[in-house]
Each structure stands twice: as structure tokens, then as C-alpha cells.
Amino acid sequence: MSKKFSLLFVALMVASLLVAACQPQVVERGVVVTVEVEKEVIKTVEVEVEVEVETEVRGGATLAIEHFSIIEGTTWSGAHDRAGERIAEKYPEVEYVYREEVGPDLTVPYAEELIAEGADIVVGNAEFMGLPLKDIADKYPDVYLASVIASDLTTKDNFIRFFPRQYQALYLEGLIAGALTETGNIGIVSAFPSVQVIRRQNGFFLGVKTAAELLDKDITVYVKYVGDWYLPTEERDIAKTLITQYDVDVLTQQTDSGSPLDVAQEEGIWFVGKDMDIVGYYGWSSTETVAVSFDTRWEVIYERMVKDWLAGDRSPETVLYLGMDDSMILADGTEVPTVDIMNDNKVGIDAISPQARPLIPDEIVELVETRRDQMIKGVWDPFFEHEFASNGTGLELEGLPIPPAGTVVKQANDTVSDEWLLAEFNFDLEGMEILE
Image (cartoon, rainbow, N blue to C red; front, side, top):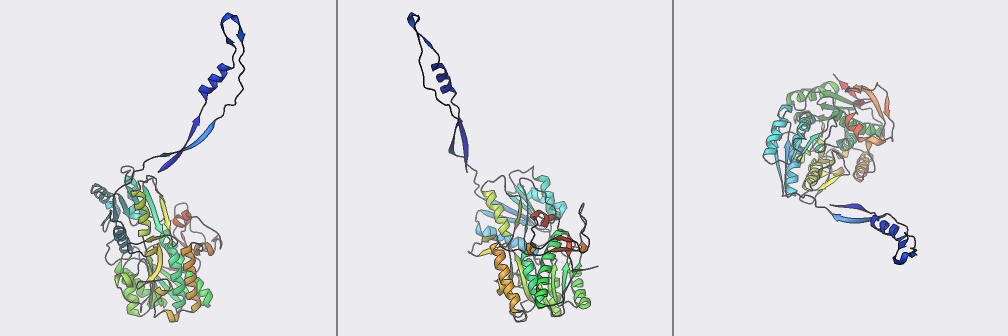
């Protein structure tokens, strides 16, 4: 790394000589001779000189991910695990290691064990169990510690926070779901109210709402909470309830087990997946049930951390909120944006189930294609274009109450900060049905 230093030349010696030269000179025989010297202006001159400063470049790294759940059979931890593997495939000098089912009480002990074994980057893949890593950041200044963001934005020089703009792909999913429903009822099996969950559900809802307006449909989105991320039995029960009691014919989830998908397949309704291409990667169900999924490439974010660490950067970017206009080239040469719609190993509008495609009007398919292209180019975003009016429901945070129902918090075509989206978007959008 080269830095430019301004070198200031102060002509003190020259000034002294000139001052002395301007004085009368006394010589022998008592004759005084005055020597006249042409006056000069003493200037301060700035000269830019390039000086090479060596930067430590590391030869290799170990990326360690602490997964809050099991990996097998989950979409969230499964996607993080795949990301670690893809990083190791692209960078032979990087090793990927992990621990599963890590709760908050085990985060620090496992992290210190991993660091002792050579880990250079330690990640908590959920906020509730990743935040304790900040407590050991000062103890390990040469290690990057990182955690997913749910709503807390605490950082340190080597404590990095991150999240993908999943709401962008969820908006596209919402367009497709809104076009597919015939009963006008769409259901979300969800974990629990949090800024992270609410933000994603709102992105999906805006897509549904747009489709409803374009197709002149009356659509209701029902949300029912399970109480945790991975409760297969409870997720199954809620999926059944949404279908039998609320006549839902398109189902999605903000939980991590495959139970809602199983129920959708059993009941013969459409399912919209999250976090991974569940058909193409896991072989779960088929495109006869899965209309589309969104796929999260956490590796795009991890690559940023790995590159910074290998370059010896002691001041890495500490909040990474990457979207469809950020991407990574995988080991096989494929370029992948941070999030995208995907199904059966296909992307974009080709990801729409071939069985679902004939049921979706061309204007929606074209809009999905247009909006996806615009988001990849970074010239459009659903959270910029749409108004945010409060439903009066959500999650009350300390010092941040839920806005009363009907309150317009953000006008259409107004910008809100990333910090606001990540930490303060605590209310459902007007029109959602939050079930007890």
C-alpha cells in the first residue's frame, strides 16, 4: 500500500545566510563596505513524494462458521454451510470449518476453541447467538469476528455485522405468489416478530400488493408465528391451519424446517421457498409444488471478509448490507448476485415453475424480469418506490414504539437509510393479517 506524505521544506538555513549577507561587512583599515544582495522571497514548498509502505499479506485463512441450528435439512444454516464450501472451493488457501447447534452460551467457548485451532474469521450465523462474539473482539485483534444482523448494529474494528437484501428477491416472489393465488389467500408460517423477519415479510407483501393491483385482485396475506426458527411439528400445524381455516392456496415460510413444504405438497397447493433453491440443491419436492424460491449466496458477503483479512486490512467495512447488485464469481466461473430467485437450478423468470408459468399473466412475468434486471443493475428498489404505512402491528423496541395503524412512515419514492431498514423497520405494512 502506498501513502503520500507532504514534505515541508523550511529554508531556515537559507534565510539565515541571506539575513547575514544583507548586513554591512567590516574589513581591515576600518573601511566599511556595504554589500547589496538582491532580496529573495522565501517560500514554503509542498512536494508530493510517493513512499512505498509494506502491507502484511497473509498466505491463508481459516473461516469458521458457528451455525445456530443443524445444517442438514435446513435452509438457513444449509445456505451458510454451502457458502463456506464455495469459499473454500474458490480459494485453495482458505479452509472452512464449523460447529452446529450453537446457542448463546456456547458461542464464545466454541469461538475461542476455533481460534486456538487456527481460525482467522469466526462467524455467528444468527444475531441472538452471534452477538456474544463482540465481547472477545478486543482480546483477539488479529481475528475477524462477525454476526448476522437482526436489529442490533453494534460493531467494533474487528467485529463485523452483515445481512443480505433478501427483501429484493422476496418482492419478486410476492409478484409470482400474487399472480398464482385463486382463493385470494396467501399464508406465511413465520418464526417470531423481529426487525429481520418483519422486513422480509414486508418485501414479500409489497410484491403481492403490486400483483393484486395490476390484476385487480383482492388478496389477503396471513401471518402466523410459531415462536422459534426450527420447530417442525409446530410449523406443520400452523401450515395446516392456514390452509384449512383460512383457505390459503399459496404458502411460504419464515422458518427453517421443511414441514410447511411437506404440507403444501400433501394439500396440493403452491409453495414459495426461502433461503435456498430447495428443489435444485436439496431435491425437496418438485416444481409441481414449488412455484419459485429465493436463493441467498452468503458467500458474496464472506468473500468480502476473506479478501480483507488476506490483505491484512485492520479496518474492514463493519456493516455489510449487500443486495442483487453485488455478486461473486464462483470457482466454476458462474457469477451469482447476493440474492436471486431460483428453482430447479434455474434463475430469473426461468426459475418460475413450468407448471406455474401458464397460470401467470404475461404482464407479471415481464414485470418480474424487468424488476430483477433493474435491481441487479442497482437502479431500482422496492423499498424506495413504495410507501410504508403501518398496520399497527409489529415489534415494539426500546424507545421505538410501533407506529399507529394508518401512519405513513415513509412516502413513495423517498429514501430511508440502511441503518433504519436494519434496525428500525419494526412494523408490518398496512393490510397484512397477523393471526394470534
